[in-house]
Image 1 (cartoon, rainbow, N blue to C red):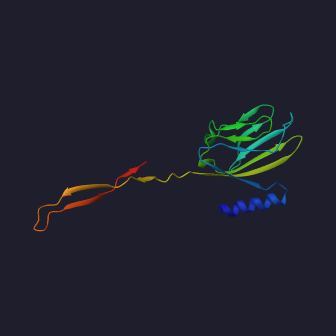
Image 2 (image 1 turned 180 degrees about the vertical axis):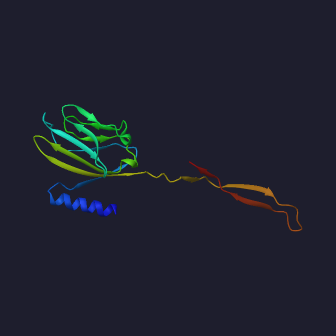
Image 3 (image 1 turned 30 degrees about the horizontal axis):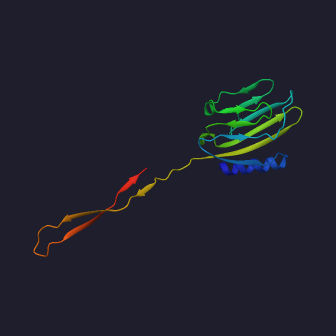
Length: 158
């Protein structure tokens, strides 16, 4: 159902002339900057950043720089006052989703980003050491007295 909604939104965006969705992939814990493609903000420009299907307002630039208290983004958002670009630091999977920036004032534009956050998987690394051989005398038997040799691998985990 969600995929159908995204497809519908993309089709609608194309019909009303809004630029395509920019796909952004980032690893959890990294930072990502969503660029507005604006070189300079004018005094009468307003820039609104929204997140998710519910279009929650997360940041706004007008005469004062504002970041709105959304628990998901606590202490993670940085706004560039010259370009309006938004940087999300120490990103997590709960930040995956659609981001939309609306610029109004001297120039009007809208840009949408689809951010995917991936968790880096660390496979367990196993190191095998050189085999160790142990010699020990075989128990006395009716057969000839010989040494037994046993193979004992050493495994170290990190």
